[in-house]
Length: 82
Image (cartoon, rainbow, N blue to C red):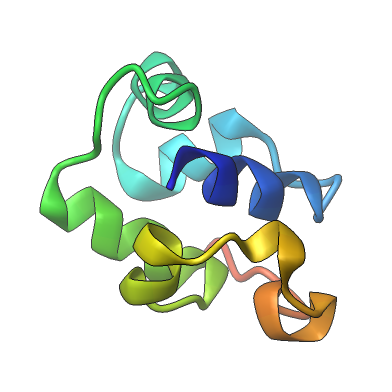
């Protein structure tokens, strides 16, 4: 999962760990730990990550999104207001 969320974030250069963590209501340090696989996000944060990137939790947890077709793995736009 950590590789997937890092990959998805890096596909949108305007999206930073700080922007995502603010959107999720967690600290940037906590979010960075999720990307580095130092800790797993709580279920509510995992669902928030899934919704933010418009990728199912199943795909986040089980697939290697780096091997997916880009249009299937990465949403076209990010809405930080939702």
